[in-house]
Length: 156
Image (cartoon, rainbow, N blue to C red; front, side, top):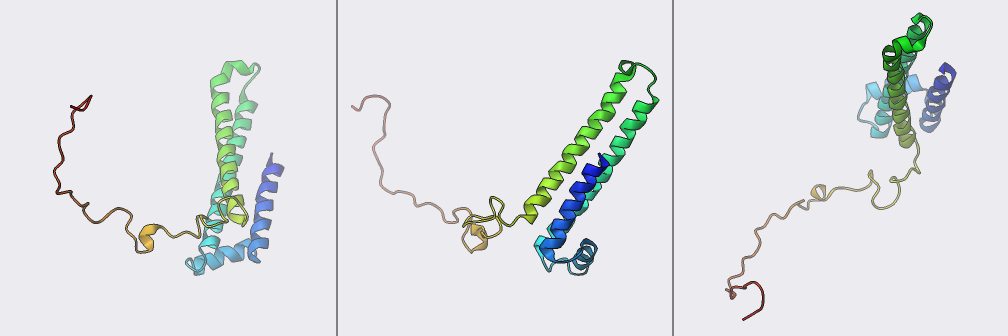
């Protein structure tokens, strides 16, 4: 499984380096030096760090599961609960790692759904930032004309 994980990390690292034209360590230093220079780079570096942490947690969970399986003598059903606990930790770690890899893939893809068109999340400016209020700020006009009370059912 380590080879597969290395492939995921390596592939995403290569995509980052290709997209921004810098090595990842240089990119991390650039973000640390000027964190407000490019929000896109900051997000990519942040999510790559989160992905690396998730990958590390996954490797520790896998090692713990292997250690439990190595210590269980004979029949695995005797220690089923403990084995399932560690197996579930591995599954959860895989889901977290894959989710973070998906976010990073989305951030690196300029043609991803939602990044193009007039309603792209990066290009739109919310109404309240264009000087328009989000909610109505004036009181509604009250009608001064009295109307006849309306009853239920058939009009009389």
